[in-house]
Structure formats: C-alpha cells, structure tokens
Image (cartoon, rainbow, N blue to C red; front, side, top):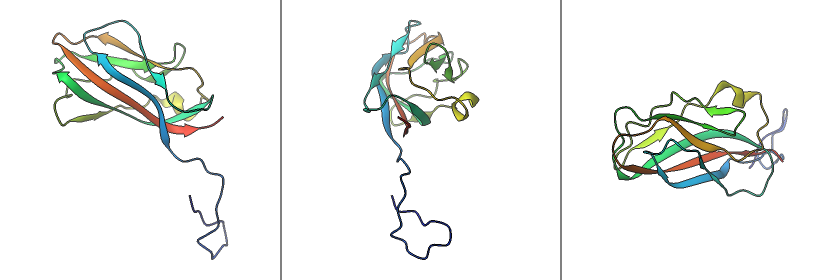
Length: 134
C-alpha cells in the first residue's frame, strides 16, 4: 500500500498500514437455527478490527422475522437486532457493526447468534473483513 507521508512529494513512500483482508467465514449458516454457529478463522493473526461484514444467500429465502447478531461470546460485533430478511438470490446484506468495534481489540472467533430464526428454510454464507492487529 503506497501512502504519502506528511510533506512528502514522492508517491512511492510506504508505511506499515495493514490492508483489509478476509478474517472469518461462515459457510452454509442455517438461518433456521437459534444455536451459536461459529465462524472459521482464515487469517493467521490473533487480534483483529472488523471493518465489514456481509452475507449472501445460498439456498431458500429468509423470512420476515429473521433477526440476529454476531458475537465473540463477550462482545456484540453486530447487534442481535440485525435483520437478515432481505437475503435472496443475487442480494448481499451488509451488517451494521456495533459501536464497540471502534474501541475494543477483538481476539476471539465470533459466532452467528439468531435471536429470531427464519421460519423458512434458508442458508447463507457470512464473511468478516477487517484488519489484522496482531
């Protein structure tokens, strides 16, 4: 990543700023399940800062009442009131990150926790992007 430092005129000046990457993935999440569904860690680090969480529908369609969040067991990364109802073929849902992600160093693998599971059969893939702060 090329970043100009203050007062620099060269565009080749670089810094150690970490680039956004895929941190965790949850493939085939069952949106009818109220049980914790853990993500799979895909980065090599031990601490992270999430910047984007997206979901895409794989099968079925989510019901009107499908709500739930993403948590590491202690911290809500996405609030339990997040709606996943618009998941459909060709549609991506971007989750609203909880305010704590701006001030809390996260290190535990998160899980999807549906407070109100879908009444209709639906599976989806979830992706957590962010910065490795290890």
